[in-house]
Image (tube, rainbow, N blue to C red; front, side, top):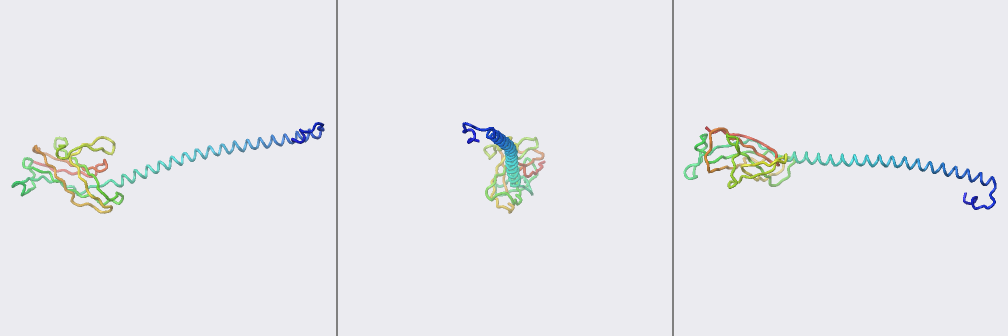
Length: 207
C-alpha cells in the first residue's frame, strides 16, 4: 500500500488494489478491536472472580481462626465450693453450712483435656455472686476487671493461672476467697471464665 501511494502516476488498477488493501486493513483492525473487547471483558470477569476468591479465602481464614480460638477455650468440670470454718488460729479447718461460721470459701474444679489449646499458662477468672445478686469483690484480695467475649467489661472476684499441657486435664485446681465482712445466708454462685467465655458454674448454700 505504501508502494502504491508513493507512485506519482498510479493507474486505476493500482488504486483498486489500494482500496482492497485498505478494506483488508480495516477488517483486521475491527477484528483486533473485537478481540481486545472480548479480552478486556474476560479480564474484568477474572479480576472480579479473583476478588471474590480473595474475599472467600480471607473469610475462610477468619472462620478457621475463630473455630481454632473457640476450640482452644478451656472447659471446667467437677466444680465444688466449700465453706470453711477456720479454728485454732488456722490449725484446723472444718467444713460448715452456717453462714456465721464461714471464714473461707474454698473452690475446687477440674480443667478438662483440650486437644487444640497450646501448652502454657492459662488465665482463669472466677466470679462469686452472693445471695443478693452482687459480686463478691475486693481489689485488695485480687478482684479486678477483665473483658468478656462480647467485648464488654467483666468484673471478677479472683484470678487463677494454671499450667496447661495439651490433651491432659488439670485436676483439683484450688483457690480460696477470704473477706473481712461476714457472709449472708442463702445461695452463692460461682462462674469460671476463660478467654472471655463462661466455662463452668457451681453454687453452695449457707443457712
